[in-house]
Image 1: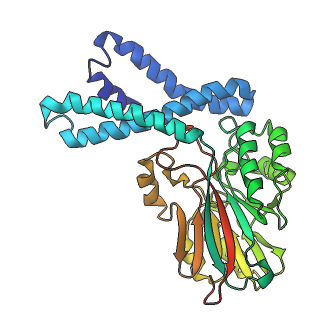
Image 2: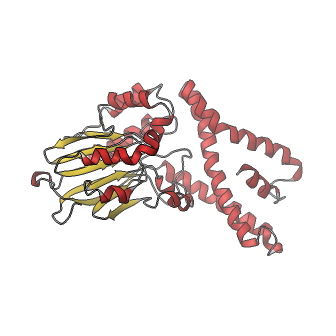
Image 3: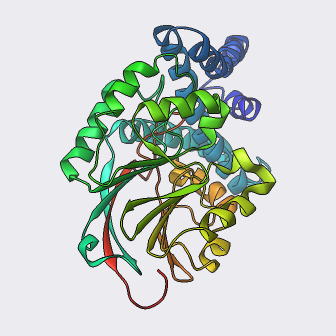
Length: 358
């Protein structure tokens, strides 16, 4: 990515005069190193040191991706410089201009607090006394150097204002180091709901140390569903599994084992990644599946690439009688940017459904 973008910038003398090539190369190397260096420092030292380095590297990652996307579009239009030769430089300048404008827009969008999106979900077997209860779904907070205490408090204030009966967190709650987890844990302990706060792990809990992150989630007072089910209320079953990164090739068998064992009632199934969705629906056990992981691409046009791997990328789907809701995340990963899609807090109103299992 760096080489490609550098070569395109180098081809525009008005942007990089030849005498500055070596300095721009050096800047690219430094910017390339910032993000991995920041991640290492985040795990081994104080956030005050890690944050500025990681922020610069992460921000550059987003700008670099947009530059690559628009320069590539320009190359497609001009046949990589072989067509419309008299327009090549102007088209590449336009690509650079779009990168600058949309990068700024993405930083603004990424800095905004999540918007609240509401869905209705009909669950067969839901007891009459639970009809109309509300669930707030959070996913992909990515708490750490890039999403800190101040933003977390603001998000939890939004959740509290919704007065949910139940709260679910579908993984990637933490990101990187949990050296400073006591402060995060003390804030997350304030997240409460009458029918409980339920959580499952995501891939980032695995990457940064599964056992210590599980201890962190439990210290927050969450009901962590590790390949098991539990009753939130009579007739309302909460089921959840560790992320696919934990189970690898055994993931399908683990999911099947958990869902086959659930008792009669309405079943809400938590899984970080929206994978094997049709197979899960075909089991005729889960009424509502809640997931995250995809971020809906986070920065357009990356969502088109993500959708290749995750067809159920964002929003509400009805899949063979089961409702699936995929969150774009209440936080963000990497670049402090979002483009053409904000972070979200999802509010689900539970309804009773009598025709089929979901």
